[in-house]
Image (cartoon, rainbow, N blue to C red; front, side, top):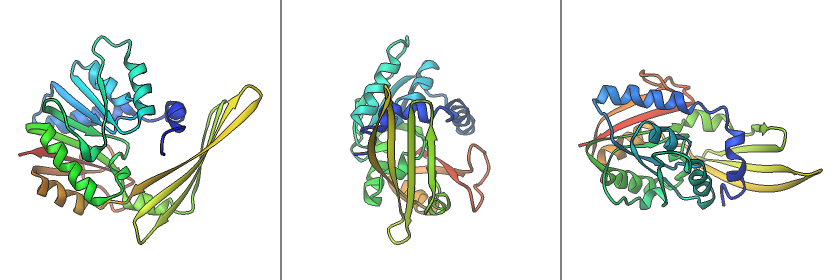
Length: 245
């Protein structure tokens, strides 16, 4: 299962992810919608990096993820905060909250990991139900152009004690990009090896906006990568914002 092994080294291998810049872009979008949220959900929160940033701004925050390993690390990271997020284990298409919130975000292509379009459509309905009227849903995807371009690529992430090799294959018929990952971790003088497989579905913006509309969202906007402008044809990461009617 994805993230069983990767969870333990995820933050080390993604220390270049600009979470603060993404949060700043969220604020730019929220300003356009006139939203000042007091509560938020970080959907597919992983190790909780975005959830922690939202909580540090004083919001009531829930972090939601399907990986027990990632949530365990997220909870450990949040222990020293005065206003820690709460973390719950749920699949996106099964999302159910104790009370509605003002904002739901899903960063770093969590949506692509829902590889069944029917499940994603259900996820959008669940997010709508999780929001207060006028609440905002912001997420990003790896674009179809990016995932198709990864076909046949070999990617490498490493530091002094971790070595991760990614092999990507894109299937044109299923629109699924498969990452075969070999993870090597240093243990004393030896290295341990484990393997995971990650799948991402190449969604198109036109189908996503249609499903959001059908789920009960309005005022949809599609942006390039952290730009308040329409994405270019070869955009690698695309952001979408939608407001609950």
